[in-house]
Image (cartoon, rainbow, N blue to C red; front, side, top):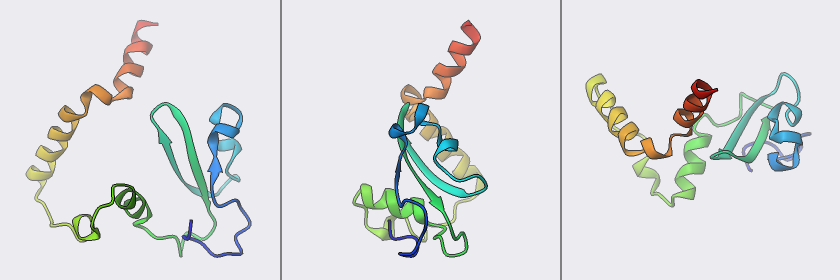
Length: 113
């Protein structure tokens, strides 16, 4: 993780599967900002942000773009979309990914109990 200096005092990458119950609050110092990624309902990884001023605002896009092996032109400097187009894109996305929405299953479980 090259987002912060070599003299950082916290671990660069924290494996949350090695933390009790995967609880990020046990892994990140109190008051620190952090970047975290998980994999569905499984534990993921976290990184304490020591210097918010120098932490790149597009860090997540850089990571995801790299994982998908995308040309940076596809996700940097995207065209501006009007509200209606953004709303339609959001609705289309929700429909396409509805089968994978774990939050709906969690809501159903809560209602059943």
